Amino acid sequence: MDREALTELIKQGPVLVKMNNGDAYEIPSSEFALVSDLHVYVLVRSESDGKLRAKILSLVAICSAETLVA
Image (tube, rainbow, N blue to C red; front, side, top):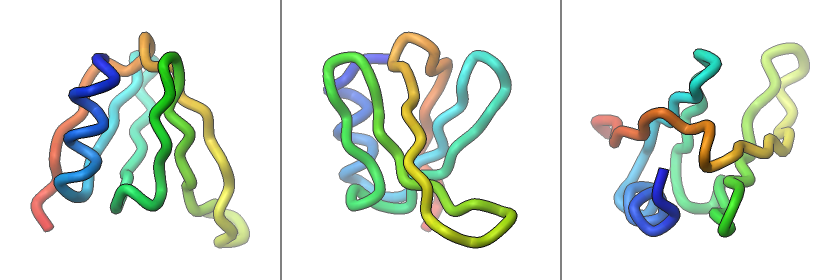
């Protein structure tokens, strides 16, 4: 995935990022993600306790990213 393209998608609104291992992460807004040259740092809510946790996603392992309908 291209860094600039992903940054623009995240700015537009909620985004669903799919990884090559089948995992998917919803990024509700730009406040929940930081895109660097190699990684995306995402805050995701834990299903077990509801707390926000940091997840590091490799840009080369992202298969697709699509804007979700708000």
